[in-house]
Length: 489
Image 1 (spheres, helix red, strand yellow):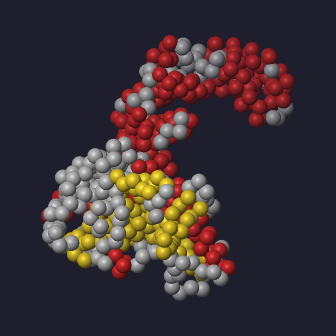
Image 2 (cartoon, helix red, strand yellow):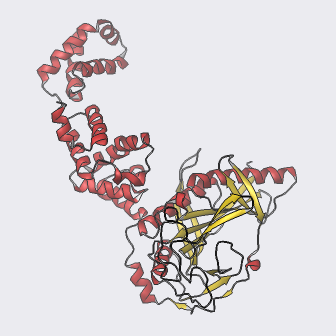
């Protein structure tokens, strides 16, 4: 295995969040939720005599992505016909871009955390990003029959193509996660891979340490989750190494991913680019992108994840790890900033979101981007953090309060008052509890005094239990330590 190096390039297809389709005024709908064939028009159905018109918003969204990926924006763009039979595109061809794409020569730095070894940064070159129209959706019903839904046909699609700079399944996963976050932050794609609005296709080959050029590659089509991207890439790498090692060799092919069986399936022999028979689209004019237009779009770019992460570290004093977790999903970053704006200490807020709140979300199998759908709004969460930092409740009690907030949506102060959960800091009450615990746990005390220092934590736990979990842990620790030291003397 160490003699082989994976060579991977990614093709990412991102549907753009425009109101209408790429070349017509037909509305864009949710292709999963909407009734089949309810969002079609003469253009998207390819009826005779219809003419396409370029969607300006789609072009601007594509420019935003190109600029976010540090691409060059050529002054001249041109659409082309891709003459390849698509059973779910009624025209019989796809309008795409070939020789003159929207954006070229970009790059994206990704942070990779391998299963073994230290995290590292990898520079991935972007070959191009071009606009095209999406295809429809086929549903196979058996017996050699299929149903077609044209709602998605003609939806604006941005295809982003990397150079073959990716060398592991971990790097492919990191790139996809980083790019997905950028697309969501830009507001051009909602990132919902389960609905096919974002699809990733890895082109995979392997090189032996003695090779001087690339070997035959395969392409895994239409992966609908980042986890599937990782698994499919890993499986295909292993499959290719096994084939080359056995002397059988790899055939250029398009593959599918069988998620249930965790294996790749050969779908067809791979076509070459010249088999698509590209030629300039005669019904669309050449598209000129002025420098003024580019700068106008650049001015609209929002703060992207990398810049937001750096700001969180500099302004809020967060660690790189915490900042990275908070900006991974735009919804989380927005929620965190709202909590801080409501008066919570930035570091405390980060700790409670990444710890307490994420734990509850994990227990409910809730995706991170759904954070704002919880019953706990940012103001209530900030109030909880302030109750802990202000000493009104301790951390253990706060976990209990947070769980009730999750279930009911009630304010934390109201929960604390109703259940009498306020933290006890009265030294006389705590001293009485400490005295009682020391008397009732004589054996534990003797063992501690005999040198078993680790038993101190058990004694603290007994005092906290005696106080119903509401005692100020620091006061308990101080009084207990003084009492034990007095016994030692």
